[in-house]
Image (tube, rainbow, N blue to C red; front, side, top):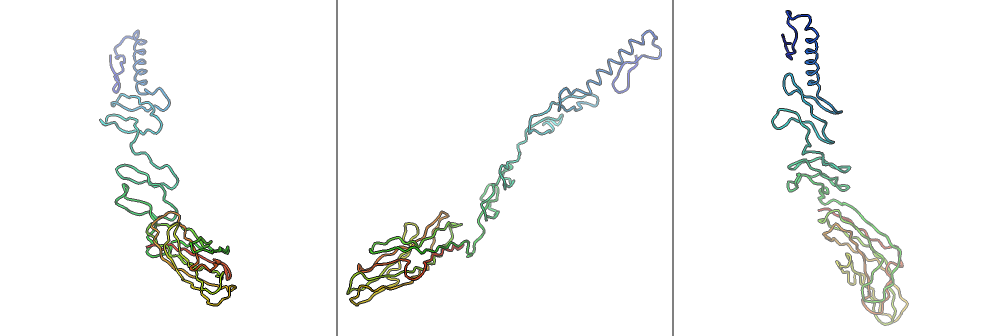
Length: 275
């Protein structure tokens, strides 16, 4: 019996008897059927066929979700595998970065800028822009509510404002214009008032007798209007909300202080200064 060139299928020789023709055809058909099947080994949707030799094929079944097709470690066949480097991004604004593997850098806060920093694992970080003495923000408050103070114990006024510094290294410039009146409640004595600036519960500046008011007559119906100003550069060293306020009090016992009364509204302005 002769054979075909590529797949060695058996075929009858020229000298074979005609009576053996049916057998020869069956032999040839079976060989062709087997070979064709071997060339199409796939059985399931998603299967991939690949050659194991110049004349033979094998089937690799479909992989699982997220896998990729790659060459095996022996470089002899394809295989499905899960890659170590899948995207780490999870949130709007994320950046794709790298340390020893693919990494995620989450979006920064509003107003921050992307900065190189070798101390970070990815070499990058979000940071506030370099300040360099710039005004980073301004908070201002105006009050028309009067506070009556009749004691030497410091008492809160309504002159207050709150700022949240962008950087812990920032300075806060506090500008206060406090308006009010002072009245005598006893005759024959002088009168005076005092004022101090508070950061939260901490005194940071005291303007004792900053607006000293006195009169030596015996009258008890005298009232004096005043405008007191404070300019103070503070270093709060925080990025938390910080409240600045004015407290007032009497210096001598015969005065009655009306903080923020008699002239116009009082104001307090906070300027965050980057350094």
